[in-house]
Image (cartoon, rainbow, N blue to C red):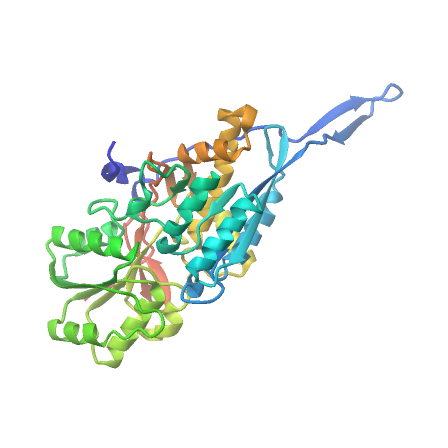
Length: 424
């Protein structure tokens, strides 16, 4: 089956699918001994060796990515405490998980240094990428050379998925495709069903992920019959972004929708600058929000649309546990929307360790065995079914969301929506 046809098993079509998880090993860990002088039964805990699975990653405590993932260490700690409280037994060992979260300060060179350390000195069993496909691309040689599985979190891009890269994988669909797997495919499906916009303008950053999404979405817009009246990819300016030239051009064209393919905090700055210069289209679409979005825009954020991999009204595997962990971590999902990808990754890791013990009992916990299991995953996640495809990317797709009265609501598809899409 071609990748473009995999939408049938992504979030939208997943409501009725259930996949049984495989549980390996002893349950309970007790035996009964009968004394010679009394029929009394004495329980004794079986002493099993401990196997620690080390997971290493970086997050950005400062810099441009801080509003997107700086608090993820709190979630990592909540998940680690919870999973280790489950007393998992796999392949006759008590399995513990240890998550190391280092600060890369939104600096790619520092991230490379830290991931090299995690792979070579700390000897982690699994790496998880930081935010940004730009960073992720630079980490692939570390995973490949040291043969450590690297799960791409918010870091997938088309050029990663080649036959030569055997130690990387992701839960996400190939979102750069110009069809049903596209990042905004469900958004344009919603627009087509509502049949209100006529014109659209695109402004994006010419970098991995944002640029991939931009090109995919221009094609999707044209396919549904929208007139693309403006299309520009810019080199990013993290220090002092000034969008005056683009806003001036947009004011003259007056599109129904302005689609922004850039990091969420900068989409917020674009919208604020446009408002200051007297321009507001009928709808803004930002490919992500992030922690700085609502604080930057306030009431200006109302009506802005986006996409996401999970919303609180999903009811797939371990959704209640995910909500519980967010609460324990003191994290509001409306602020940290991308943290669901971390939960999915932790689900992937646990399932892969279990699968590894079944497929390769003689070498259950080796990096190679876990890597093989990760590449063959077929499982349920908080966002629906995940089937890892042969290049390493997955089948977990996105749904449209909108900010309404300061809250993020799900607006499509109708079977998952908890609010009605607001449009002119």
